[in-house]
Length: 201
Image 1: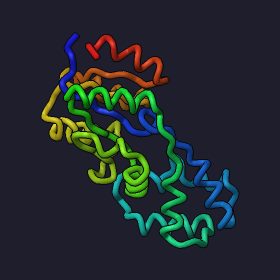
Image 2 (image 1 turned 180 degrees about the vertical axis):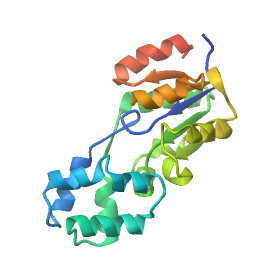
Image 3 (image 1 turned 60 degrees about the horizontal axis):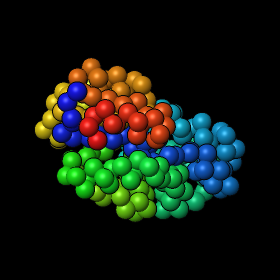
Image 4 (image 1 turned 120 degrees about the horizontal axis):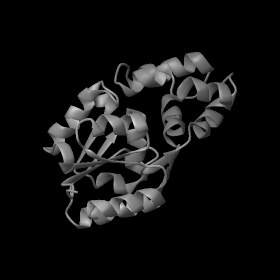
C-alpha cells in the first residue's frame, strides 16, 4: 500500500464536531418558530444547500432565515449565532499537527458556507495550518459531485492513490474511491487512528 503524498480532510465531524441545534435554540429566542422547526429549516435543507453551493450570498441567506423564522436580530448577531456550533475533535487536530510537522501537505475539503468558515478561522487556530482549502460555496459544487473532486486534484497536484481522503459520509468517500484515492470513512477518531497506521503514518 502506497504512503500518500497528501492528506485531504473533511471538516465537519472529522476535525470539528457541530450541532445546528445550538444555533436553532439561540435563533428561536429572537423569533417566532420553535428551535426544532428552525433546525429543520437549516440543517440539510434546500436553503442551506443553496447557501453552501454559492447560489446565494450571506446577506440573502440571512434575509431568507429572517423571513422564515421571524428572527429579529441584526446580521452580525445572527452570524455569530449561526457560526458558533463547532467543537474541536482534538485527537484528529493533534494528528493533523503531526502530519504538518513531518512536512506532509494537508488540505481541507468541505461542504460549507462563508459564515461557518469565518467563525472557524476566528475561533480555531489550527485551521490556518493547511496547504489549501476547497469549499463548496466557492466552487458552486458540493460533494459528492465529481467536479469538486477535480478541484482538489488541481489544487494538490496529486491523483489517485497519492491522496488519502478522510470523510464521515459514505457517499463522499465512495466518490473519492472512484477516483482511486485512498480513503478512510471516519466513524470515530479511535477507528481512524487505527486505520491510518496501514498508510505508513
